[in-house]
Length: 438
Image 1 (spheres, rainbow, N blue to C red):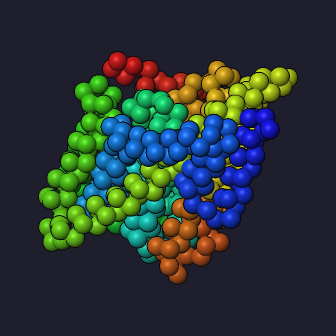
Image 2 (cartoon, rainbow, N blue to C red):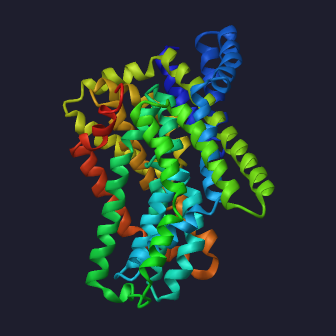
């Protein structure tokens, strides 16, 4: 049997295993090892299984994953999200649609300290949704704004999805994190613009708040956010200026977030520390299993020459690279309806990334495009994990169908953002190209 045929059979088997509910990391490793056994032999397959887990677990660069997770969870438990929301609510809550705008802005800012879309969606459902409903805001718009704005955490650094992409494609983690800043701001800006226009056209969606807040109270609320710029300067500023590598910035950020917890969390520090460490260990283990499986699977595909075969076949297609890219993006939107972000990237990147490189697309820019598509998947039915997170946190306050209807205008904004990023790659590449040493 030809090696390339074995490769395609391996891909088919992988899809079958995932369809039967096998954990993605296990499925990737199993298919990769079996394929290696068929193509290289038992010694090669056993050697691959023996060395890959150690290489991943002992990698210095991969320590950025648990460190960013630790930083985000410390930021989550420190109450920083509540402080950000309060400040945004005091400053812009009186405007038409102000509470929705405040939720989007606060969620985006919190994403820059947390990096977890699930945590962002859950906590702002608890903080923001009751407040918006209290003032008579439309349930669909309110819940949709929370679900959609939570996805900003996967694009704005620190983003574990961007780190995951960088690891699988062997790109600069620092450049990818910095590249997410302007597209993240663009995404948040279009969300805000859409809400403003929608509320201007239909004022009944978000009745104005008549509360008048003294300027002194507003200023005090801003002062209470000292922890946010502290973390941003450490992580983003350190990476951009070249003072820190991405791993060093993650370490300093995690330590800084730990100090913030000690200063802000007065009553249950030991409980917070225990929960944070346990959750970090669990999530890190899950991500590392997927990375190990993806590396084993990608090495099997390399031996089978499937990526090379696909590149040669695609080069013969009489169409432009942009049409092929569009086809890939449509595929990812479809996959995002059924797979989580890590699984989607782990399964497809070993096959698609070599094609993207051969077509001449910038790998940093493509990483941002990929993560933007992942954002779309996070709020697209039937999976739409952020929608279910909001529903779980909201309980009976809002129906699942209302949340899915509420995210439709935000999905439209996501697709517009995607078109803009494809048409103007420099939005993503401007900052990384000007990094110290970039």
